[in-house]
Each structure stands twice: as C-alpha cells, then as structure tokens.
Length: 192
Image 1 (tube, rainbow, N blue to C red):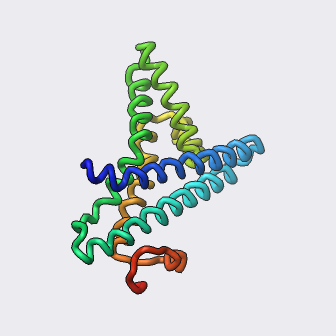
Image 2: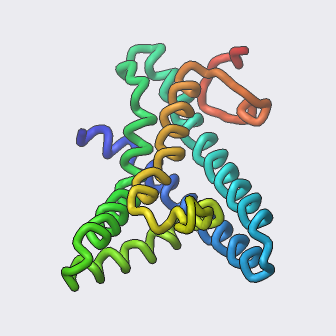
C-alpha cells in the first residue's frame, strides 16, 4: 500500500484537481443555462462537462498505464491491471467522505449536528462535482436527483471506472484515438 501511495498519489491528485477545475466549468454552464430557463441546454452542458472531465481522466491514467507497460515487460514491475481502479478510488476518497456526510444528514435529520453536517457536505459536494449539476437537477417524479443521498455515492463511479479502463488499456497499449499516439514514455512501437 505504501508503494502504491508513493507511486500513484500524484496521479490521483491530478484526477482530483481536474475534477475541481471541470466542476467549476460545469457549475458555471449549468447556472447560466438555469438562469436562461433552458433545462435541455443545462443537461447538454452537464453531459459535455462530464464527458470532457472523463476524457481528461482517461488520457492521464492511460499515460500512466502505458509507462508502466514498459516496466512490466522488462520485469521491473509486477503486472497489476487493477491499478487504475485503485487510482480512481484514491482520487474519489473526498467524494465518498462528502457522500457519507450527506447520507448521515439525511438519515439522522433530527440531530442538529448531523443535519448541519449533511447540509454542509451536500453543498460542498454539489460544488466539487459541479460537472454533474445539470444531471443532478433532473427529476424523478417531483424530486430532484440531488435530493437523494445515494446520488452522491453514484456520481464518483464514472471517474473510477474510467480510471480502471484507462490504466488497463494503457497497460495493453490499446488506443482508441490518434490522440494517444502523442503519448510518450512507452519506448515501444505503437500497437494497433
């Protein structure tokens, strides 16, 4: 575990920083569309911000997997295809802490401490995961998705799964777009 944190805590931090940066963009777009009264455009902007965030995550983690593939090939590193999943989970720790706080606020609303904790965590989570704000404003019946505490456990999952897939495909040096041909550090010819 210590070696994993040493080797991949920086990558996890980059994923988290990308999340905050794109969250600001997503929140701004969602707010502008909401003020214009255009719910369809708000959802489209939220989907765009989410896809852009996942693309940034994918390219960063793919590059790490591609670099590790050389070390694995020459026996300097053990083959660990689940490393991307662990990178994603490490990057999602703050999201899950906020989700737990939000859940406690919903489940224990009569406690002033947990009620305040839940409200604070929900507010921070809505900002920190702002790229999803347009999607969280969707309704199920008469209730917005951001009114369900379970939503805050679900929204980190796309980034976690993206990290897992990106590292695996980077480790295998499988490319889905020519953009990845610009990646460096593999030392091998590009595989098709």
